[in-house]
Length: 113
Image 1: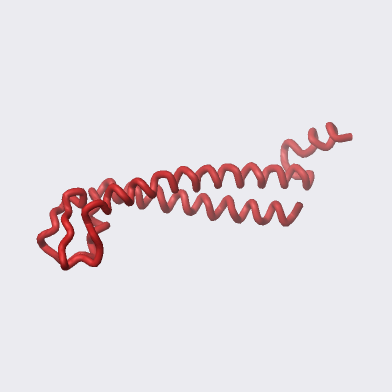
Image 2: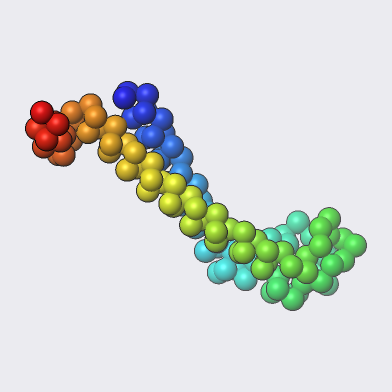
């Protein structure tokens, strides 16, 4: 039970950190309209809006769909990481109940007897 508690707590913390990081990246990208995504390109021909960016020889990647693709990948990842954090938190609570720790532990023990 202690292993379950430790692993679920660690996974909950890591999933929460991942969710916060993805939410921050998502918010900063939407706020800057994707200009940080094409920052590695040194071309002055790139427009301010990343959605209108075109592929140039000065950029090491194709900039035509980077804004939409990044958001389309980050949003489901954010939802899945948040769901993982919630489920890991519930698993941590179950491990606490199995150890007899927490508010539900005493009633759970009486029901089992």
